Image (cartoon, rainbow, N blue to C red; front, side, top):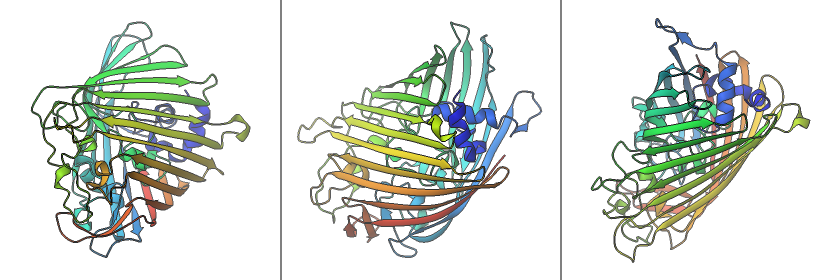
Length: 440
């Protein structure tokens, strides 16, 4: 589909195949799957394939205290362990009977299970806020998705997914090794991760495909309400445009929830807390009421022909808004927005270098950190540089440096279990790490 982009992404091709076709970057993930079509275990029943990977590494945060808490706002919980920490990010297995390319009535399925430290934070979606080293639990089990897939021979073939499936929003995906960088980005932290419902997709031609779905909401098996007190839903839509020649594409993705999601991703505080020494329980005790949530995500990538398939540029943009989750007009809604840029250069078959820069802003810092710091808004930045090495088949080794800064970006210590902050600063927060991935 996008052959030039595929060759650039070859450094992590074996793992990118594990990312769902609906997770972004869709074009890259689909094409890398073709490159590793023989990299699986054939089960007794023909057509059912088992694949997976083991993702482990070491990280060091230069903030926080040993055996304490390192809170770098906006980071994934497993990326915030204070000081040095060995990590089992994930052991992932995927079982799938994919649809064939034939335009005929057919059915298949897919199920993905993840065990490890990432699973712990994917189940209970929170950022680095209130996280400490004791919460790094490699024994957690996370069902990423499990769905039935159906094709109806209408036009070019109209496909449906029914069950639990990963989000259609965002450039980065849940599988770390399929992303350009080891750590998850600021914008990824604000994207929905998965839904339970129905998603349909239709490809008009080689240049245009669309998706439309109805789901319960983000990160929930319940209906879309603030506390399960009423019935609601979320509507998904996506439009993806591929350039002639396949070396560039542009994806536009939408989510509208008829009520505020029963999800930590979109929890809006029911009270205003302006002191850094105040507790943060208001975030998790949001009251019931009517409201809505809307998210728009746009991402794209481009592999310029003059670079001989060695260079890849990409961007990711986000705009979200949610109304107050109670009927008190004194509680304003929350708006968040951000943008990110990516670049990757493949020097040769075994070495690549990737860079990522992101900004995340908004009117309500409590959406992420659970408190308002000196009345300031949300304003976070990060820059990440990642070196990748493919020296052995199916083995990926990466080294990474990351820098975070911005309003209340680094919270060095939490003095108690309620989240009272001892010290808070605008950073910088430094991170270095190494990752080793074997895929099968």
